[in-house]
Length: 249
Image (cartoon, rainbow, N blue to C red; front, side, top):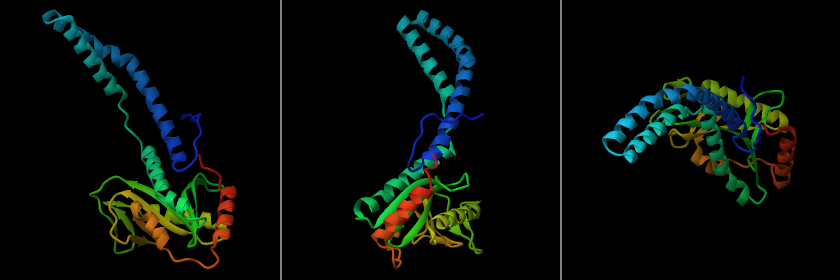
């Protein structure tokens, strides 16, 4: 049974990183159990080879052979497989860094909240951005392949290489709707993609905008302003979101 990590984090990618830590902890415990029997078993022949090498040359060369064999055995046992959770958390942190200048240089015209729990749900909101354009929900996707094409088919469905992504689009729409219920105002839905190339100008599927993550800040600034979304309203909406949407981690 997975264990809950004792150290709590907050901010972009915190909940995904917490899951990654749980998975990594389970993996490490399995590796420790493997090492208890596999390391001695692999080092017996290595020790014999080191002894023979020392007899044929000198003890320093023999010791070097044993050290190298031990290091290689440990690397084989403790090699991490990684996880999609860790990849996702890293992507969310990159998106946070992309959005940060909006707040730093925005003079109160932007507010950004990261990794917030959707009420009565196990789902979370990656990034909620509030500005003169009104509120927008940004979901981070880390699609590693730079050769797989991101496209919209004839039916308007999103694809990443040969993998359909319409379920992801529907999930992002649902998450944006939950944010809208909290704020009492429609929320734009955006998918920011890291690594995989998006056609210039982005894509739109079922009302969700899909753009390259590196273009996110420029895209947010280019959105048309909505009447009434001044600094005071942005501040009030951010306060409401902060009160109603607790940190997911």
